[in-house]
Length: 140
Length: 142
Image 1 (cartoon, rainbow over the protein chains, first blue to last red):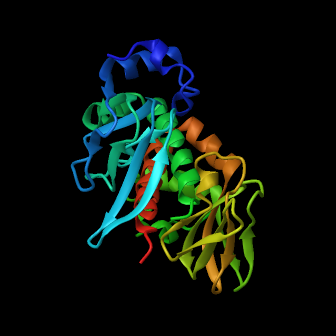
Image 2 (cartoon, rainbow over the protein chains, first blue to last red):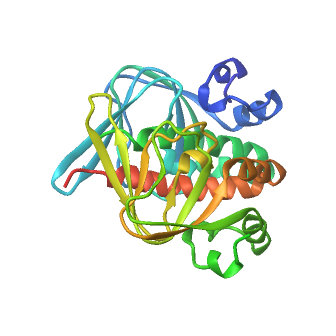
């Protein structure tokens, strides 16, 4: 359960009305992760979608030869967008660069909620796509 | 209006029902461009979302240090995704590398359609986000 106050002023949740935020809160949880925690490995099942409340997360994209690219994600941004977009596996490692607080939702529960509430799914996906669009222009 | 046959076998539409595809076709059109034409420039209002039917487009992302990051996209791929997700401006230059043909949708008509049918917006943007995620991980240096 995520308290409403944890979801206010989160860019990715802007435009979602309080009733829908409550439904989102009901299926999510707040997690704390010390510096160095690996949230997921590239190739792991894309089980959770995260929004970073506090701290910093490094997304590390790997190839067979080793680390190929690192991208830093800060507060208010989504982590594990593969999960929200319905991909089966994460496309990167995600490691906390600082002690972090994250909002977390299981993919299966999010999908179920979005199937019941189309508009909520649309708004969440739109916010995720905006974030991905901003990221795709960044130099590898 | 886009003829329905033009929307068949486009991967991003796979999750959509026939009725949704008909609704999309009704608000889109087909456009063509010559090699060297700019579809849009960085900072232009994000007016249109395109899917390449034929040809090739190079996307040029200007970096804060003045360098440019490029990505080439081909048939079946979306161009001007800023528009699909409702951003006000494009964040890249989009230039045709070959004579090209596109399916094209105006952002305001798309947003109106998504507001009337949020399920369509959800499914289409999710399909686009899936491809964007793969493109982000695929931009690794070789």
